[in-house]
Image (cartoon, rainbow, N blue to C red):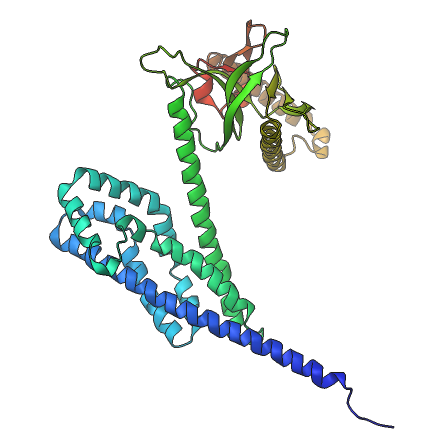
Length: 430
């Protein structure tokens, strides 16, 4: 019997070794690029600290609180990155980033302050002639390569995104038996959380700008668009189909995460509001259902139906792509809102205590009499609270016919989510 090795064994061992060599080459290339980019980053940060932070402090061009609002923790970030660079140049990637992550709060502070820093910088450029000349002089230095201070302030945010990609590549090409594998895996998670924080803050800021823009487009100040938790989705012209078969009229619609706002253009001869819109109706999406009436085929245009608790709305467009996009956006917004409300209700149910246990049915007459007195006192308190909150917990609801009816709500049913819209708004809230 021959005990010769299989002809496939050397080839298998050879292919495994090639794979390991390929991983090692990728890891070496990623490590080299990481070190080189860190050197460039630290050099740029050093220029910012030297030619802006330190000189502004020495000259006293800006007050200390203004300097801190613009530059935040950039000086401390520069120090911890210099320490990180020392570790990286010695090849200690795991140890270096593990120590670096203990100071990530400095980056979190900088990330949360970046929008305020940009605003403070813009104000100082506009108001301070001395600072404007100083900024222009420093930016003209050849070391900055024609970069503006506004661009230099975003360097830490960009660097965090670069760290995330570098560390993922480094971890993927590091063997599990390598002592740095566990360290790099933890670091990737920590850096990714800061990167996600940057993206979330950017989305929130962009959403805030969109809400402000829509608020400025609406006439007057009665309709409040800037509400916490509200997200802008889309806007556009759609035709509303009246119930009595008259001509469909184009209206401007704004879709948010919780409401659909219908508006009409103001009079073109108005001296102030010529480019603005007047709010007509606000439709809450909480109890809305949307259906596509037609527009399923490749015909021109489409019609969608929206059913609310106290109204029904037919929206039409001659552009089928546009009406399909509206349909998808409405379905997504309504679905997310309903799922969010379901989670909140379930959480409240878990927190609710049982009203009465089985053993309460065997209470003595004295305990039953005491419970009866307590229940009577609670009922009296509820009646008193209802009479006290009578004026503050009633809203006027308007239907399609134009008649208004007043519905009294209990204190726990008052619409606290949109207090600004229901008080003093010229829009009809359905």
